Length: 633
Image (cartoon, rainbow, N blue to C red; front, side):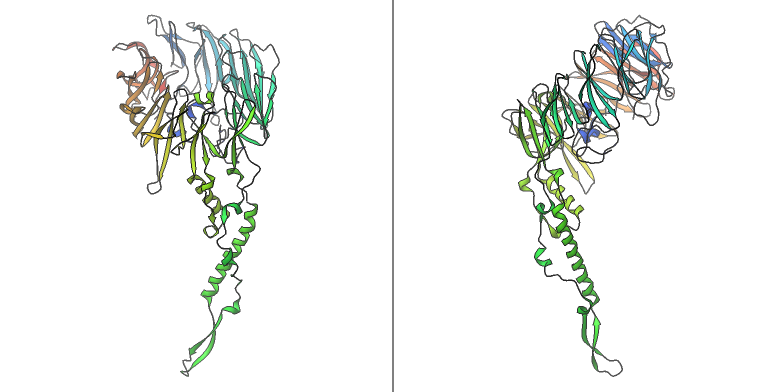
């Protein structure tokens, strides 16, 4: 597919453009991969699916055994484990990362899949979605089949999308379903679960609709023929671009026009009511503007070479008479050299004509912000959004972006280029040489002292941000990253502090703490939190965060698929269990682990850590834990 903003080529289904950063219709930017092209730096080694509940006295863990969904009550150890009716269905008996088990908010109902299938050319598997009272082994209520996504509402209703026409339904605990819409690409629900907003896609045309979840009123078309959109977290403010016009929709009222000639949305803050967006200005930057014609004067003296002009007379000794005679000869080398010079001149003449028509509009972008009912220019030479890993900055309207110091861009000499592609390559190189990173806070624009390729995390409330500075070694064909921190807000001087050099993998960012790995070798490295060293030989992607700290795995054995599980509470680390294949952490004293796992039999022992040294037995011959972290390397 191609980006609707800059035309750059993208993999099918991409949620954003890796070149200009523009969000693609019908897809939300994934929060856990919010640093765009640097997603490979983030931990994605563990596959996590929902399927565990810690609520009051309800500590349930769902797991796969004997081809079906089972459950144990961790709070009440003496209770018998439950096997819910129905065959899980997936051939390899290994839960797909997109297939989940969920519980209702009060812990009374379980929602689980059976008859799971996956086509080779699809991203999401399909399954039959079932609902049952927790602990009951009778036949469940089969809500629907061919489901590929679902969401459990607080009132024991469930939203789900069926494959085929991507039909969105709502179903109650009695199995009564009502159709909401078809051709649904995505949906969003407000915090109170009173409203739903969804995006429909049909024949390449995107439209956004809203309806109350009680379905007492008709659905409302908020926007049609949408190119870009951004929906705030609680649905109170929706920004859309139809063709090239930006609109804002507040509280599901009729849309109001903000601006024209808009080519993308950068941020949409429900909290501040601001919307930042990109415009392509009327002025046009042409090739003639960026090229210094240092060959014009010399080209005026270059004429088309004629054959006769290179016939020369010279004296040559006659080998019979011994006398010198005047003879004519052709200077082929001089003739060829003259033709090369002439052809180069003609090529430059063609380029001179073409430079007037060659536009570089993609690099001439302006960043605007609409707030308090007014549109204001933030940056005249906007480059791109620097995507961040956190979510708080989006609420506050704070984000990082790059801009060009255009006054420092040197002109390219005509003598340095032979084609338009040479010109484009040199110009992009010159632009990158004068690129700088800025933080927009709605109060001011802070220019950072370092150019950051990715803004890993921004926390305006804590007045701190983190970013990655990239350095490429052409000689060694390697790229290294330095993790840096900087201040946000009033009094920020833009200075960046080195947190870690040769940083390999960001694992987690939460509550102002950034966990990362350095010196990674064979998928394991040194774990740090901010600048404090936590542990060694920590497996990539093994971190699981809870309120009291973070769990992680060390000393991973790839032959057995096992590791040692540890827990760090902010002060010290301790060992939870050895020979762990998968795990799910409720809190520091409630952890389910799958140990002594056989990769051949695909079975292990499910045990429970309750804060004491000895693990409690739950079940044996268990295939996998729903909602846990499992190793895939």
